[in-house]
Length: 85
Image 1: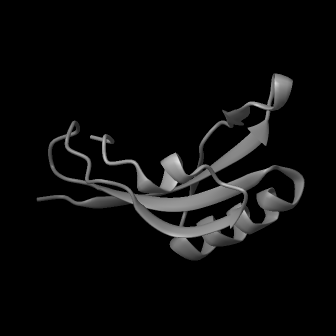
Image 2: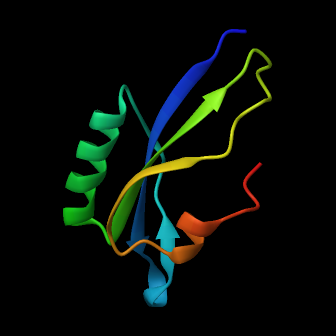
Image 3: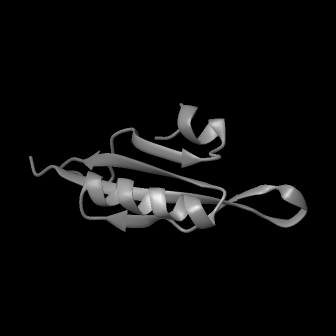
């Protein structure tokens, strides 16, 4: 089984009429890089999270996201989502 871990940073912005919008996800090399990027993005954005996901040998099998770090104002639904496949 060839397992790979993906590290991702997701930023959040205030969109039109004050609605929170999701930015484009950024892939990082390590959890430390993801944490550093999320921290820096939270300075210029509403907030950001860093999370990881593992993939199995099957391309379509991804584990649930694991939150590494959260900075700034991040919607609770982004952290507590149970519906992510």
